[in-house]
Image 1 (cartoon, rainbow, N blue to C red):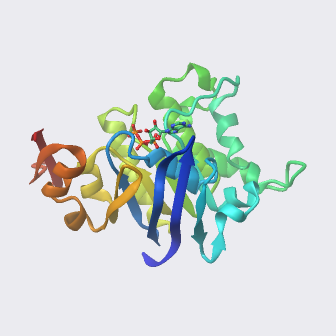
Image 2 (image 1 turned 45 degrees about the vertical axis):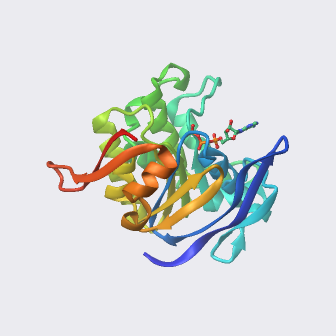
Image 3 (image 1 turned 90 degrees about the horizontal axis):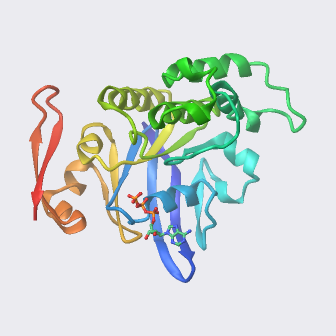
Length: 260
Ligand SMILES: Nc1ncnc2c1ncn2[C@@H]1O[C@H](COP(=O)(O)OP(=O)(O)OP(=O)(O)O)[C@@H](O)[C@H]1O
């Protein structure tokens, strides 16, 4: 991890007169894993969509290595940043491989082609995301967890410098959740900056390099886990009593919760 090439600057999203994301600002180190946490409705998905340029921002900017990403044409932005949305669905009769192949479109020439490595990159992304078994299947027939792996593979095929994940372990069984954590660590080791919305605070504490706590559209804390995810703040933001213990199998932080 070096420097902070990725910066979210005062991003605000107002929808129908309501402020959903309110002047959110944070920087993320290159090759770091930043966990975005907060209760239901805090604005995590809207913020990720705004950063990716999918949701229109009312004001603010997103910088990467000196470029203002929101001002870039969509294809150029997609070469820098990929978003895996929560529960993204498709009705199109595409196979898993077709969907992953779509991740290459920002790298192809406008008329298609001009991307000689595409086949190898697609196969590699399928394998890395544990989605190779679904390459020939129509994605509409896949389970939620299987589809999630295909969508992660598509984002990997995009070869972004910044990877945004919205609840990447949603739909995944316990072993698959561990696979995804492993995958995120592998991707960050390659220098990709990961920002992921996660509900599992134990996962955030065990694996993230930094945590951004969002509440009612605002950043209420940002920094190392120990400083941000204190029992007091968890009570304040999530409305539960909490105590950190250790996972006896891994030695990593584990959150015990109870009624406030
Ligand atoms: N298009 C929209 N129109 C109106 N309200 C919206 C729209 N999109 C999001 N909201 C509202 O904005 C708030 C934040 O939603 P968002 O999905 O970003 O929260 P979240 O933190 O990702 O929640 P969750 O943990 O439940 O996924 C919610 O109150 C939601 O109802």
